Figure 1 (cartoon, rainbow, N blue to C red):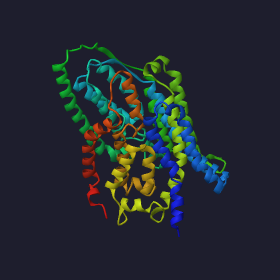
Figure 2 (cartoon, rainbow, N blue to C red):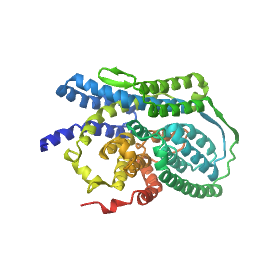
Figure 3 (spheres, rainbow, N blue to C red):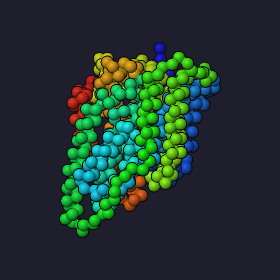
Figure 4 (cartoon, rainbow, N blue to C red):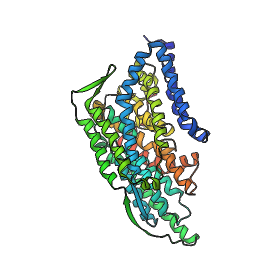
Amino acid sequence: MTTASGNAADLARAVPFIGLLLTIALAPLLAPRLWPRHYGKAATFWALAILVPDAAGRGWPAVAEELTTVALHEYLPFILLLGGLYVVAGGLRLTGTLRGTPGVNTAMLALGAAAASFIGTTGAAMVMVRPMIRANRHRRRVAHIFVFFILLVANCGGALTPLGDPPLFLGHLAGVPFFWPMVHLWAPAALVCGGLLVMFHGLDSYIYRRGLRDEPPVVSEIEKLGLEGAINLLLLAALIATVLLRASWRPVAGIHVGNVAWGAAEIASDALLLVIAILSLLMTDRRVRRDNGFAWAPMVEVAILFAAIFITLIPVTELIAAGPAGPAAPLIQHLFANGAPQDSVFFWATGLLSALLDNAPTYLVFLGFAGGDAEHLAGPMASTLAAISTGAVFFGALSYVGNAPNLMVKTIVEGHGIRMPGFFGYIGWAAVCLVPWLLLVDVIFFAGVLTRLPG
């Protein structure tokens, strides 16, 4: 029987995970100059905060085996896919300029949102943000355009495949079929993205007409549209095929790293992801990446921070696995009613934490609360998995720290002299524009049971 002191000790093991996520969320805002130089130290501190006590209690060999398992089966494929998408998307460049009328801007947002599910939210954001800036360089009031850009291209558009958003790829690694999001999430994604596009067109039309009345017209140069680095489209197809290979090919062969099995399909897919990224670097004109503002720093930061996230997540996973008899029982009681999952509660709980922290680890935590069995969640519990998935993807747009591309877009846009809303100003914009559609998704797809919570 678990004692109260035992519960407290178990919960204390979750402190490094919570501390790390809070550091990632707040440090870039509170210490923007120090964070780029010291984020590796912060990640190391929180990782050691769990590794050292565990090694003292269970011994380094047991901890090393656990780390090897996480590294080979979760961290390595996750980072290789993110890196592959980052490199391949960084080699694609849209050239030329359209005139940023409301119709053109809406079409560009729709294109970016559609691309996000196939080249990732980060990839789509990096490919589309500069053409969007160029298209609207003749306009003075444009901050709202890039608020909707973050909502649509950097977040909600990535809901249809595991390539689209990191939480969905983590779900795929856990066993959720590749095409499951496309089959089960297309309707809520269409509702949210369609609603945001209609809202944007109305708002942008109003601001555009007012600008024509209040400001002297500025005629921008219209340049012929084109695509540079087209070879990366083939490499993108190769990335998709590699992810499908990992899920469908199940050979018996493999090797052992220490006591940890590493299957041939995992080895082959990881190697292919690395090769594809290298081919993209070799086959793309360096000028294209230079003009795209391609840099390794964001990917290096993601790799280091997620290494710490996966390490500190280990004890949290163990707490969740203890179920209703464990320390997480009070939270589990609110997620379930009479043994049945409350999909609406999963939607809002996953979503709100995704907005405040990072949506990828939040997704994994609530996947664990829902039972952690991907095959069962993708089948009989599909509505619960849909609630967790849409919560992680959609709510990541509610703050600059909810999803990695959000701050990247803000930085690029401000670098071109466009003033974006501050941290809380953006939350206000996002809440007004996005929350009505989230409420509608809850009512239509998840029964809106938040109004009927027990107790």
